[in-house]
Amino acid sequence: MKHPAVVLLKAALAAACLWAPQALARPAHARGFQFGVVGHVIQGNADEALLRHAIEQANQSGPAFVVATGIKAAGEACSDKLYGQRKAMLDGSERPMIVSLAGSDWGDCRNSAGRSNAIDRLNRLREVLFADGQSLGDRRIALTRLSSSAKFRSYAENAHWEMGNVLFATINLPARNNLYRKEAGRNSEFEDRMVANRAWLHRLFTLASRKKMEGVVLFSDGDVGVQVDEEFSLLSGFQSKKDGFAEPRKQIKALAEKFKGKVLLVDTQGAAANEPAIAWRGNLGHLSVAAEWAEVRVSPGTAALFDLKAGKAEAAPERTHERAQDRP
Image 1 (cartoon, helix red, strand yellow):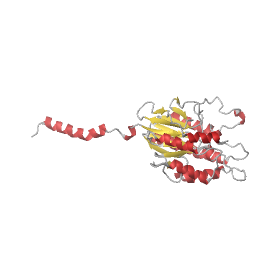
Image 2: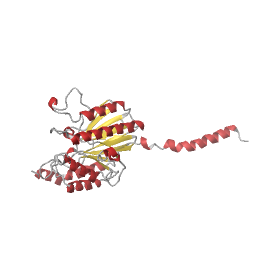
Image 3: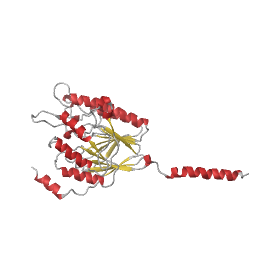
Image 4: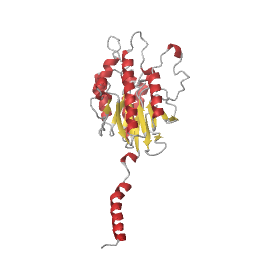
């Protein structure tokens, strides 16, 4: 009969063999990673070489994924040809590439008669860029789109994905007052999109809370103004103008207040002269990227969770600057 001490020792050693590998292996959700954000570099300059250069720079550090906000300048053609060319460029990214639409991609588009065809162009972009449940890029990641819901099957541009116990999502909130139109009658596109976005935000925070995620990151074109005190108007002459961001701003603030993790809003409306920085109010943060690109480090399990690594891009090819200067 074996001595009880020997039996206990063998049992302890056996248990150690079982748990040691798990103890030494760091859980996947606890590993840090970084993601890139490509600023809307062709917002006022139609030189697509700037966008290509920004994509290359954002890929250099091997981010988990890259998000590009906007694919064209407002003054560029809203043609199928240009949409296809930009899609091919974004699809050439080494890392997974997610597109967050900008208002300049579709909101100012007009047909040959000079009438707005914004809705037609938005629908075409949905077909070109968001045809399936995957990102663009050489390496792809799975995305869940709002269009998977029968009620909102048109809104494929709103997508979410998970990484490092953080929920990431795009939401169609264009700059220039959320593209609210002042024309008489029902503002149908704006109102329908607000219904879809309201349901989308509710779904995102419900999912994040149920899974006890550490953070939620929202990418949009427009700055909804979460850091602005409500008693101050976001628009000059507010009495005569509707604030197109009022509803999503109120909803995001309310949802963030109930959420136990961090909430980070990322847009590309910052002033080019300012260094990008994350501004926090409680658990609600805001990052506006005006540079060619920026990189955000995610460190699960830490109090800060998000840390901005301001990327110092190499100078763009000289020929890019020459073309920009030669353009009237």
